[in-house]
Length: 295
Image 1: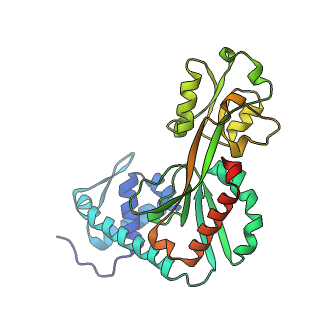
Image 2 (image 1 turned 90 degrees about the horizontal axis):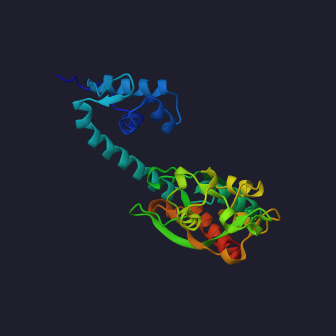
Image 3 (image 1 turned 30 degrees about the vertical axis):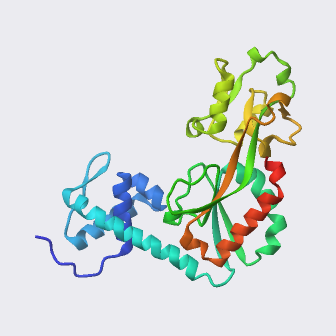
């Protein structure tokens, strides 16, 4: 028989329970929550003690939900969804001033090579705000408040997000000067690695390269122009990385092989925040101003 709960449950304990059920391992859960793995074990243990129920079986390589844990997980997830919705609504309703932090998720190469160098000219328009840029290939989860805004190279698939295309990103075929003077059958290529193998630019390159060899693969988009400069081969690069670089040559017959829209996404609850709205408008203005450089 379950014992009665003598003290109120802590929402954080429920959050640890849900994340551990999602990840299955202490180490992965600790990384997701940015804590030590011992903290995860302790918080879940505290929740079990308060409930009087064993939620997980501690197996050698992972933590497996017990039958009782499975039964409680659906309710715990509903609690998580409500708490996140409350946080998003609070971020919108509570931001009456243009002060605070706005978190922007953006592709790392775009953030470092195009966006950040152009932010200085806009700083005077958001003097009381702090912009935090999260540069990662993985798409930040706006429902879980991992970011307030997200710049993405594809239309967001999550239902309920507000999204608009801000600019077109053009791609061309680049290599080190002199590479394109070689016979095409001798060309070698620089490809997008596993995490980016399904991107349109890699699909185009795979068809163009056909049976010709690849000399280099990478998941780091910023490493691709460096590989080109080093003479490792031919790559499909966005023009914001290749255009204007004296150590790169653009093939005249393949100067515009494809174009991808750049989307700005925000959760509707957060969009009510004046500071998020201001930053979204500033980003839109910036990208529209430099649309020709991107395309």
